[in-house]
Length: 88
Image (tube, rainbow, N blue to C red; front, side, top):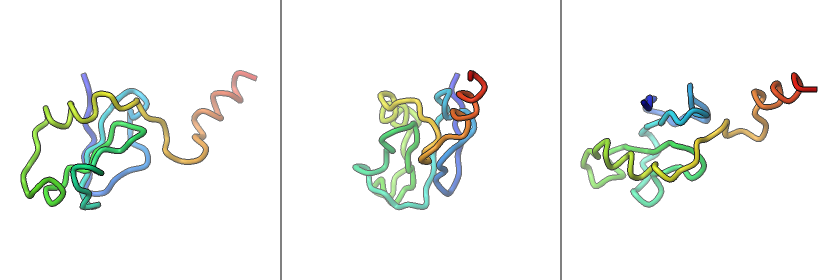
């Protein structure tokens, strides 16, 4: 089971991103070649970037299928640092 987090704006982090949850957003007006984020399972699904046509969930799953499960897209993920500090 995969949860899909939807928002008008793109997020740097979302609930369950490290478990494979998908984030779909608009706002950026990215075309099909740029719509899929490279280091996580997120995608700009705005219609203006997809020839003014809605895209199917099957298309989204296929586009994101090989993307890695992401972690926080900031220079330092405090969740990882907290985990490492607990192990010391």
